[in-house]
Length: 631
Image (cartoon, rainbow, N blue to C red):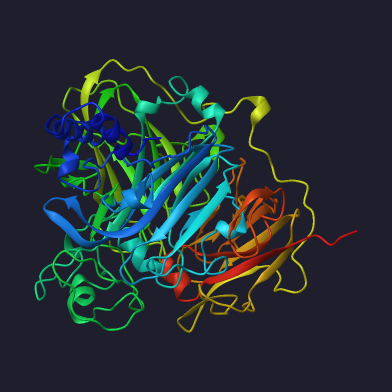
């Protein structure tokens, strides 16, 4: 872990004069963060993320002080956010007073079995908040939702303590009634857990650590001066489309509405207009659309003319990452957008696709590398082409690309994010433009890396375990299976029951299950649009996607995930094992000196659609895990 700058600075202070020390401090800062960091609190490069400050010397414990605070953040291309919500990591709360937060927040890079201790403080001006550790199988008291802890008022503190037991790409963000606004305004960060196998494969089967990049993708709208905000979020007349020209209009609220005409505070109440450089609150009721600008690790990478199939000129000042022709490049991608589906498509300067080969994502490495997407012979249609990758809001993917060996020096490849057919029928897009999420510039040649569909990743004795045999079922005191996502008369719900983040009493749509059981459950999406299903606290193993009158898609491989996209009118069948885990807290929510070995899996766990405003508007409920009866 990157240690706190202040500790290194104090060592320099002991041996240098004041003047020499000042020079050394500047040099130290540039060496740690890069010369561009003086221009942007995001760290300067869209291809790097800040790392947490680990104050614990133990090799299996990561301990840090994490603060949610407001900051001015430069997202590049001449745009600064003056009211960004950010996380920052420090050696103490006192040190954090002099540190500026970042978008995204600092990354936790962990090993399976590590224990995490986060001393968290809310320093936002007016808003309550907390931290949900998305996808981590932690103890219930650390889940960070209003079901597990009182959300923190400004100035309040809370200690999160948990052990990471499964490899994968995870992330953290607030999770309460107005958290959609907070995520949209920058309050999120990455958490990546590796296993020994992963490290052993790096540099041979997988690209090296130096050729591995975290990409936290998001979108945002930044207001202009009052009265000058855009009346259209995008120019839909020029948007590219996979089958021709566009014929629809973007459904979300425009910057003019969000910033000028209907500005609201974090609770949805009318407020004064937003100033230039401020990010508006987006929870103003439906429709809530995508942000105007796509960010890669908090930075706009810069435009490129043309389309993925016919790329044009790179904009002046666009950010590039140096690569070697023939090398492998591993991208660990998180979609922290509130609404936007990210469909990634990598092409070279002539428009030729460079395949994104999936090696894992939410649950560590797969048994074999996979090319995913539709081919000319596909029966089940995912609506993206083979070699592309779809990442719904909240989801993550671990992919590898092979930079073609024949490319010339200074050749530019671009990773684009394109629209996705997620709303209703086959031609119902979200009406958002294709824009770059990454630019790669060939700076050398001679790489010999290869990976392809079917490349073995896990050895025969360490394959992903299948969740069998089944044991138990949902308990009688709650609603049974199937779970359904519904939209009846414009009201989003679970089984036609409107839920909310902050409920104090059990909703009628709640389910109950017993710790230790392995269940096979279903979620049916009865609406006319896609919804990503997310379960807190437990990893699920998908079995199939089915639709009446159509051939089902059966998952012919095993994987652990916590979130999966469900197309309209389809049913997801999945298995889940309700594993117990240590409990680090007493009944008052204080960290125990010695954790109890069991009990951490018990409690109330949310499940919901991870299009964030859908959850806020009612597509949310809970799974209550109870203890097994005593013999």
